[in-house]
Image (cartoon, rainbow, N blue to C red):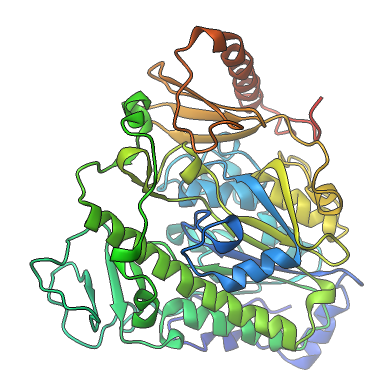
Length: 490
C-alpha cells in the first residue's frame, strides 16, 4: 500500500492521498469486515462553557446536537491541563507519568519509543484507513503519528487576516467595530484576538472542516478512523466578525463568586493569575473566547451535516472532546492554563455510538485516558497491552451505573515536581510539592470555592485521598506498564 504523509499548505492538498484503484483494492482486501467507522473530533483549549453543559450565554447548537445524539459525560477530566501532555496521554492510553510527557517541549516518542503505536497507528495496523486533519498531536510534534493521510490547513496569509489595517501592534482589534468605541476606551487585553473580515471557509478551521467533509465523501471499502483537530478556541481568539457580533462585551456576565475566597487557594495552585484586570477587560476576554468557541461549533456543524447527507450515523462512532479546559477569570483572576482547579481540569467528552444511549448524561467520573480502550472495545478490536484507562462502553448502555473510585489530573508545579489532583464523587483533593493542600466538597461546593484542607474534621478524608495518590504514584514508578485501577468502585 502506498502511504502518503504531508503537511499541506494549500487548501486541497489533501488530494495527494489518492491511489490507484488496483492499489486500493489490494489494500482493502485486508480490511476488517463489519467494523464501525470512527470520527474523533478534538477542540483545542475548550472548557465546559457550552449550551449542553448549562451555559445559557454561549451558542453551541452543533455540539449540543451531538450531545443529544449520544452520552455526555458531565464529570470528564483531562489527565494534564496542557496540550502536549494531554494529547500524548489520551492518544497513547497512558497517564502522563507513564508517557514521561510533562512539558510542552517534550517529544512524545522520547519515552514511549519509535515503535510505540499511538491510537491512530493501532487502528491503521488493524486495517483501518486513518487520516488526521489539523491539530492532533501537539503542533511541534505533528509528525509523531504515522497516518495514511495527514494534512494541516494553511495558516499563512489568511490566518487572522483582517479587512483593514490593525491599529494596535498586537492586532487586538475588531475588523469592523459595530459600536461607538475609541482607542482610549478599547481595553488592551493579555490574550491575542482578532475579528477578521473572512468568511468561515477562509479561516484555518473552516478549511479543516471542508477537508474532513472531503474525506467523508470519498468512497471507501474499509472502515475509517478520521481525526478532526480544530484549533479553536485556542488563542489567538480569531474568528470572522459575525461571531464577535454575537457577544457584545457589555452583555457578558462575569463569574459569580464569594468575595475573597481566592485567599484560601495556595499561590502555587493559581496558574496564570491576573487579578488586576478591569471588569471590561474580563468581559472582553470572555467575549473573544465565546466568539472563537461558536466559530468552532459552526465548523463542527458542517462535518455533522456531511454525516447526515452521507448517512454515516448507523455505522460510525463519533467522539467529541476538548483536550483540556480553560479558565475565564474564576477564583479571583485565574485565566487559561495550567491549573488543577475544575475549570481547567474538566473538559467536554461526548460519545455517540450506534445502538447505544442517546440524550443521556452520565454523572460518573471518567478521564481521557479511557478514550483509547473505549474505542477499541466499541470497534470489536483487541485492546493493546499496557493501556491504563478502562473502556467506557458499559456507561454508554447504563450511564448511571457505579464506576471509578477516583480520576487523576497532574500538572508540573512551579519550582519542580508535580501537583496531583484526585477527584472522587464526593471530594477533590489536590497536593503540591511545597506541601500545600486543597480539599473541596464536590456535592456542596462543585465550583471549588471553600478550601477545607485546614479544617481538622476532614483529616481522615485527606488521609484516604492521599493514600489513593500514593498508590497511583507507586504504580506509575513500577517498570510494568499495566492498568492501575479497577473499573468499578468497591
